[in-house]
Amino acid sequence: MTFPHFETNANPHPGWASVLTPAGRGAVATILIHADLEELDRRAEQGQFTFFLARNRIRCGSQELNRILFGAWGNEELVACRVAEQDLEIHCHGGYAAIHRILHDLTRLGLEILPTGTRLPIEFGTCSQAEIETIHTTTLARTLKTAEFLWQQAEMAGPFWERVERSLAEPQPSPLSPRELTTLENARHWTRFGLHLITPWNVVIGGMPNVGKSSLINALLGYTRAIVHDRPGTTRDVVSGETALAGWPVLLSDTAGQRETDAALEVAGMQLAMQKLKQADLQILLIDQSQPEAPPLRNLLSMFPEALIVFNKADLPAHPDWQQAACAPVPLVISCKQETGLDELLQEIARRLVPEIPAAGTIYPINERQADLLNQAWDKWAYSTLPHTNQD
Image (cartoon, rainbow, N blue to C red; front, top):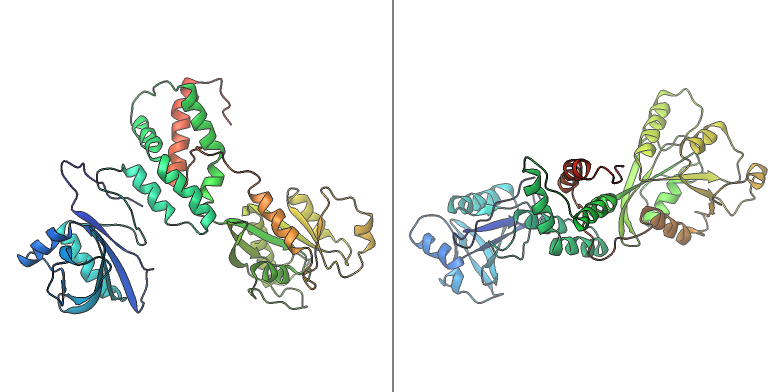
């Protein structure tokens, strides 16, 4: 994704516009225009382009703040509201044609069209492109907690990424100061954390058939997302749902149970399940403690030694296989039927995903482009100038 280049105050940028409502057909769309509204009024009066004309015949730049305005954009009637000195919200038909017509007129004027959903509280010429990108990423936050971390980066990290880009453009790397090296190392350490501020952590539930995987994902999500049935092989595809645990966005996935079978459809489902388990940030292996251990389960336990082991059906007596087994760490014990142990499970999932958080003032990448810049910077600076540092 590219971001608009904003010129200096000596040559002011004409402004920008952004569609605030989600893409797709809807009853109403909202377009935010940030510009010198009086200048737009003036050009419209001169017949240079189409702009909003209020029914009260008062120019947009002279309208009262937060007053609902009825009017037209060309031959289309719509509603507008001046929400700040240089901000005008246009509320038009939600179809693509109406939105495109307005954006086309604004583009002819020279306004930048920003990515959908962008609402930047900045003055042109005061923010670098890196700062603008970081602020935009903040709009993608899924929870209040992640928004707080993203906004901290928006307030302080812009100059750092700007310097990284400038330094990468230099033919020879300049020596790093100890403080700069520490900033780089900390940023690399917290890359995974930063990227998951806008991308949910991927938690995948695996195990044998009929151990309660679908019941568990429904219980954790708080609504029925997966089909629950006592017939083996019910889940043949990956069923996912997004939620938040302790304020962190999480994508929970229920996979096909692992068992010995020749049915082609089930085999394909189990192969997909294994693929998803390998890609997960955290695997949950759910075990029916009332049933004996079986070869497919032993295979799962050996393949994912770091998985979170959970015994389900605590309301039933434990099978001797599990009474005698020594599991480290001790598995969590739950009952989806009686809804016991679920709070402890939620807390443990959150702890496994985010065991610690960065200290205030720590800079780290919050999107893939910044992560790539960081890797390039480490290769160019740290590897070439400080070979004695940890090069993991």
